[in-house]
Image (cartoon, rainbow, N blue to C red; front, top):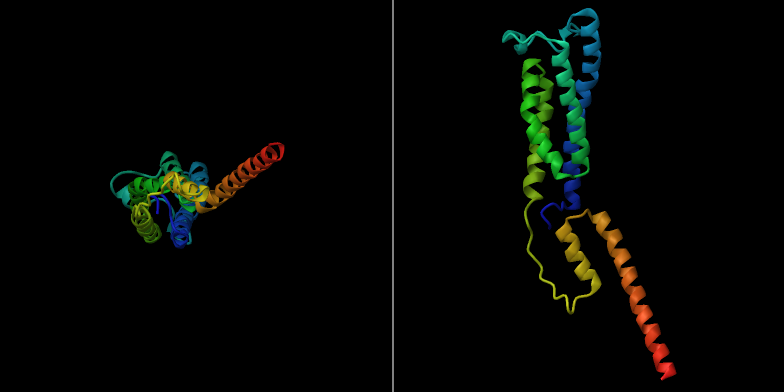
Length: 199
């Protein structure tokens, strides 16, 4: 397998990681939008079912009180989680990088706002991301192809693996190249037969 190519069986792992990212992004992001409006209007931390949503946690214990800019910063982290989910769903390595880079910021807000639910989902997502990052990044055995004797499909497959495109994209491109090759062969045969007739 190519460095960035993931077998079909890994698609479930990629997409499960994406769902975890979306779960956290939406689960915290949507209430955060209302919490920002409520705090800006009332000057108080929004309380849901008797519990303060984004305040009265370790942040305040260290002197970092809840403010609109702090809530907006957390909302931006939630939006980044949604982008990360889309990247992971598309099986892009940038999603893996974003997941690991964003994790310290997520941890800071989950701890500061006392959001234990984030630890559970975030830990599961991180494990899934590390799994796909480790096991789908192993270079497989190289296959040397004799370009002088190999057919167009074998050469095209090697080029596809080098470019690390998705299986669906490679299949479409391979069919197009095969059709073009068949057309060129048919054209040469037709020209050869005309030459024999006129000879």
